[in-house]
Length: 317
Image 1 (cartoon, rainbow, N blue to C red):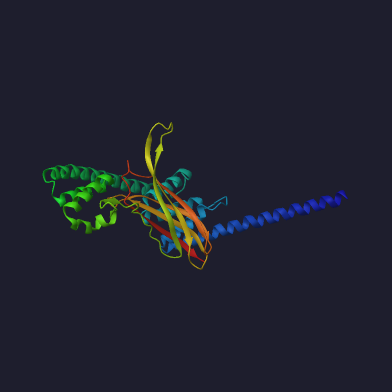
Image 2 (spheres, rainbow, N blue to C red):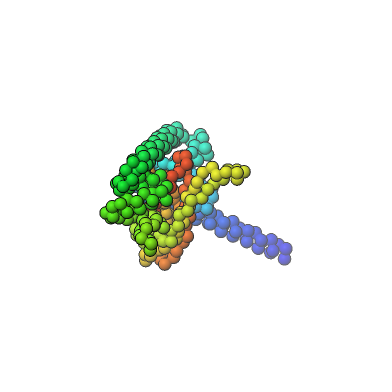
């Protein structure tokens, strides 16, 4: 009896090894397939599709990832080509840190230097624009004091306040411009940003943010809020983050895989403040899924956001 029992244990053990081996083999096949597809898209210059595949490979739960170095290197390049400089900086920095002896490191460091140089120039341009707008506000305030009935001057001052994210001050100037010359009510900026309240005065619209989506994945119920991030001791805020949340609804009739939602926010100078990609996986027709993107990689203290865009990338099956 003991002999028979031992044989059964051996048989069960061998079956477990075989099943485990099959599962591991299947996982490797899935990951290898993703990487092959990514490399195929990359070789044809289809960098956005390649980015989807490299991301799916890197963020899949299966381990190990024998081609992680290649995937990080390629993903960083795809992000760089697509103009997602901050994401590319993060990916390539991870590649250089985790694989310091990789033969591709020198080229990755060249890209990093180029990206960081671009971001520094962008930050400098933004700061110059802020300073220029602040000077415009000072000048226009003096002009409106000298010519208080000049509707155009009040409107221009409102525009400058708006660029700086000073909405309440902008509203006062828009309201003055409209009262002095009702024709300013037809101005596109005034129409887009304000409405007439029950008391006849101009009011700020609640939200200027409308997502742009196409295809079977519809983005709805979007909310945006600004959050203060404190330092380690919680004594004072060190920077701000913008949290964009919403729901993705599958309104098509085919399964969509590798769904990624790209959220980009802009300041009032139409400069990109940050861009993030949220991976939400596979969705069946009729299914909905919540998503959250935190955007906090700004150059210095951020201005208020002017607008955001959402783009959805997916594969139909």
